[in-house]
Length: 172
Image 1: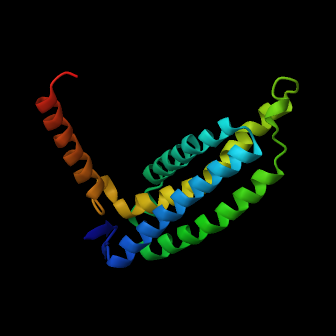
Image 2 (image 1 turned 90 degrees about the vertical axis):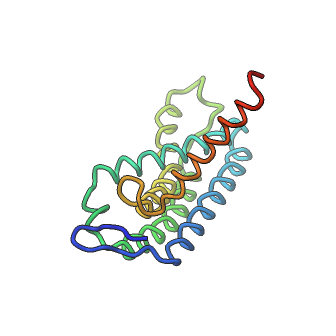
Image 3 (image 1 turned 90 degrees about the horizontal axis):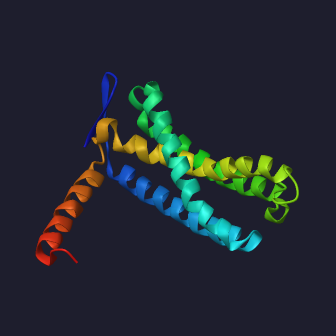
C-alpha cells in the first residue's frame, strides 16, 4: 500500500504492520495496567476512568492530526513513527510517575476544593500516552482512511452480518 506525502509516496511495508501491532499491544497493556493501579490506589470506580481517558487521548490525537496537515502530509513517515513510538514509551513512564506525585485523594472531594483542581490534571496526565499512541496509529491509516484501511472493511462487514442476523432472527 502507498501513502501520499506531499510530492512523494511512502510504501507501507510489513514493518509498519508489525509496528502498529506492537503499538496497539503496548497501548492495551498500558490500559490494563492503569486500570489495575487506579483500582488499587484509588477507589475501584477510578479504574473505569482509564477507558474514557484512552478515548480522550485517541480523540485529541485525531483532532491534532486533522489540524496539523504538515505532520500528516509532508513529514517522513518512518521518522515520525519512530519518534512517536519512543515518545509513547517515555510519556507512559513519565505519566505514571506524575500520577503518583499529584496529590489527588478522592476522600477529600466533599471536604476540600483542591481535589477538583487536581482531578483534570490527573486526567490529562493519564491521557498523554494514549495521545501519542493514537497519533502513531492514525498516521498509518493515512488521509481519509486510505492506508491501513482494514478498519473500514471490518466495520462494513460487521454491519452486513448484523443486518443478516437481524433479518434472520427478526424482532427479539
